[in-house]
Image (cartoon, rainbow, N blue to C red; front, side):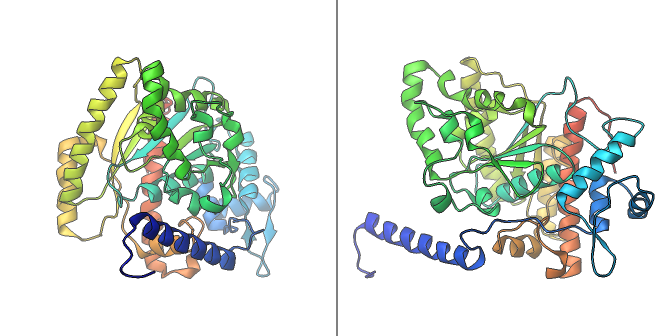
Length: 397
């Protein structure tokens, strides 16, 4: 294209097509059209960590025939698929003194937990946080539904879905919340390659909800939009323990509807002063808008709201000072743990993987271990909050 091109729409359209075609070529090279993402097998140590037992005890259980056996490598090491871990989990729970010891999900009377992950400013690690949280909860035995509500659809891409190719005929939450002829939410839920994790992907089609809502409000009032996500989720409420929603990085109708459906809110915070200033405006605007829809009849009862410092550079004095600053202001509303910035996370993302999918052998051991320990600490702290919301006392690690 000539550098003297004057038509902005033509220029942008050209670059969009150029990028889309090359992304398609890259995907075809790494993932053939008939290929599906799969989850690698896990070592006995990884399996034991997910199950919450010592790996020597896990070996003894296998030896004694108390749990199903699994595949052995040429070196006689056990390899666990996620299906294997689920079967072992059920066997352990059946023999436990206290039912639910190894199955941490909902019991009679427990409400569905809907967690919206939000931030007004891009680059805060929102999608990285959402993806790792949803996967970790599923790996730990929860039934999880993840919803990509961000039109940029990075969450979907991480899970092997290329929106401009795989969602040509729809298939996002928009189909279930649209104002004219919505489909059942079950029509847009997809199984993933991680057992226990289902997904509703996203794409640019979600922006239609933003465009159509003002007219819907004129016709039927504010309730026309704020209850739509909650109403859609009601149809599958019994099928899941936790819903994780990756919200758009702006305060629009999609975000407002997601927050109106939420029992928990996780605000990602990049610990830099400019980001704090942006978050200040985000919180103020959110409070004002939520007040408006509360007056219109919305039920905005949250069980919890937490702030998560993300992309923290270990040893960075200014970032440490910012975290101390927000902890002094918000107290226990700031998570004890924070997500570190790590090349392991970004390198895994290059191949559309999370840390849980990536093979430790592909990274510098110390770098990977530090990143995964940080990620687990954050996600397990959130899991404890979920358990406490259900009225269960959980011993902190």
